Length: 384
Ligand SMILES: [Zn+2]
Ligand SMILES: [Zn+2]
Image (tube, rainbow, N blue to C red; front, side):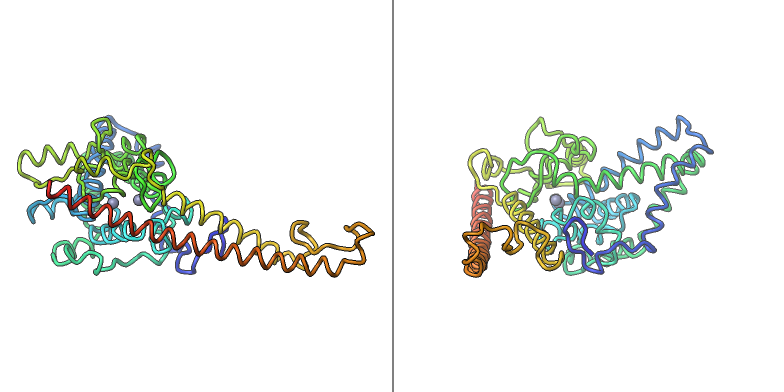
């Protein structure tokens, strides 16, 4: 199947049967027309949205996926349970998939590559069968804890606990409006980091992907909108690199570190913050690669259309010259013209293939160079 020129493997197609509950849940908040919305349920909505947002960004993302700080085993369990309440599966599932996104950002191996379209990176990737399982190899460091494996295997426990608690706090309005309503908003806000944060906003650092910094997404997701900063330097707990880059998750973690709940938070070293900036002339491999891939796909699309459209009589650009199109004086040479045209087409195709190979090689080299430079900078920063 092709969507907007993008090939989809069979296991990457939406499984409507298994996705039905996820889709139907989106209609539950409408039941608020029957339950009404109380002041209590509005407050609960806000608490559940921002509270769980913190667990997704501060726990699932900055702790389990990237290990940017340390904490006790008991607190680690609390973080896993809190993230679990957001109904985004277990910590091990979430973090192992997220590590894959960083390892293979924007390539074919990226589980939610933005290069496969907005819809795919937003939600398509979780509606197909391909990504149901989690890969233990990606998350050995946390998979060794039986309590985390338990919570990931029985990932329904935390959200159900919260759903029932919402009923006792604010009645049915608390369930349909506060719990389900905030869960849906939380889903799509989180998904925006995978989709929108790769298309909307500005790029400060030359990374090998298309990540961007966006204040809108940062406010909505408590600091995850500084996504280009994050792709560039994932080891940092802090994603807003400057004071004006609001990063509420970091402020909360910082406050937690003052009372000893978490420790060893990391900030980006000054040297790292000023390196690899696009405005300083660093070659933006990520965007170049994305544009190159898009141009290639568009070209392939046109080619396949021309091929599909039959005997070449439809497209003026590629149809062989016909006798009637040609000046009568040239008719005698018609055959010769055709042969020359074919030879030219072949030559252009060969040149294009060679150019493609050269650019791919250059990109691979640039990427390796960037990796080595960043590693060297990190080492220098550590010894500072
Ligand atoms: Zn990340
Ligand atoms: Zn990303």
